[in-house]
Length: 137
Image (cartoon, rainbow, N blue to C red; front, side):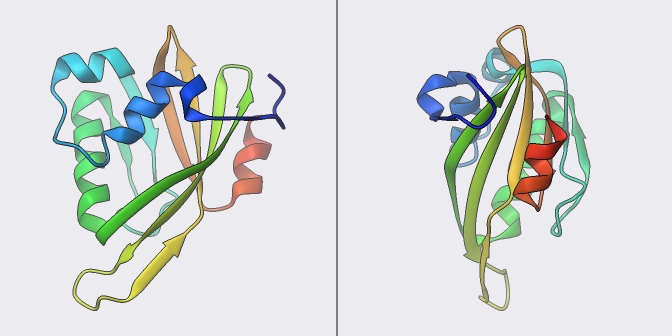
């Protein structure tokens, strides 16, 4: 599939499962091993709230906790996925309220995921969708 063609999460079961983890219970190592490479690195250092790089299964757990704690009433939607070789660019829409103030937040970032051996090898957060798409061309 070309970079500018749209696909859905149903075409990418591992990515779908990874995003489902944001709303479920904390995963065990067996579930993480089915979705992520053991050496996975997820770079969310470009994010405004709790920016950092997460490594390995422990890092995935920390990322999930950070996502759940960063906004009250956290809602998450994958709007579109674009394929580029071994990479997937996911356009995301997150909504919620800032803890304490209750101020509404709505962001439309992108995530770039690299797959290896049928599992997620790496991920990166981009505040700008065009920058994300440009990073895989």
